[in-house]
Image 1 (tube, helix red, strand yellow):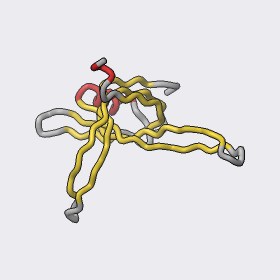
Image 2 (cartoon, rainbow, N blue to C red):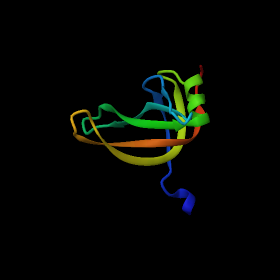
Image 3 (cartoon, rainbow, N blue to C red):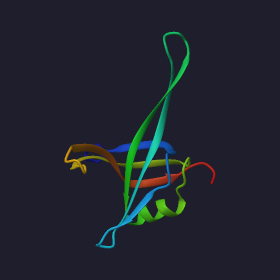
Length: 111
C-alpha cells in the first residue's frame, strides 16, 4: 500500500514548450505545464468544459526527453508525485507553488 502514497497520474496537453535549465552541477531540469479538461452538463443542460493547469517538473534523462519531443499542444500522460514549495519574489512577497515531479512520461497521439 505504500506505493499508492503521493502518486499523481494525469493525461493532458502541453501549454508550452518545456523550459530547460542546466544547473551548475550539470543536472538538467525541464519545467512545463499541462492542461486537463473536465466536461459536464450544468443545471440548464449546457455542456461546460473546465480546464485545470498543472505545473510539471522533470529531471535529468526525463528532462532531456521532454526537451527533445515535447511541443505545445502535444498530448502526454505523466506519473509522479505532488510537491509544494515556497519562495520570495523580487518584491519580497512569499509565494507558494505546487508542482508534479515526473517519474514516468508517455507521449500520446500523433507527432
